Length: 191
Image: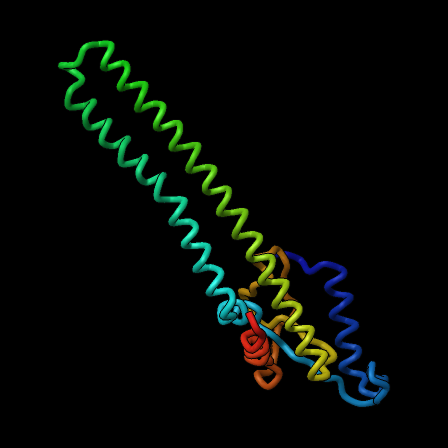
């Protein structure tokens, strides 16, 4: 289990001190309670319409990149079957030529597969980064629009964890959950 960072603990202590001291002036100059919200970024991510559309596009690109690789795999399988069926009756030079064709095709297959996988990984990381940035902006916009003072991550398996960040809330009342409002805000924006 990871130990919380000093920065995280300091942030949590500051947040708690703000919550527990309602007499401190809020940013807008008034005194009183602070408005706190929680967001399950994984739920926002999973229900973000743009995410679904963009991942469908990525899957289509993966399929398009995979088709030639699959065709090469079929050709290798056919050449190997032919080699195994005819190797005993083939001339040695024909057998060696077919072995070289198969070996070359396998090398090409591995290189193409690796290149395609790296390309897909790069595209997915970029897509994920862009979507998470949009979610973060939406959370800030909703927080500002609705006068929240603090918003914490509430999900156990949050989307921020995908990007190597972790949330900061151990417990939250369901009355504080503003996840659906963030989803609605994102999905109401023109794509």
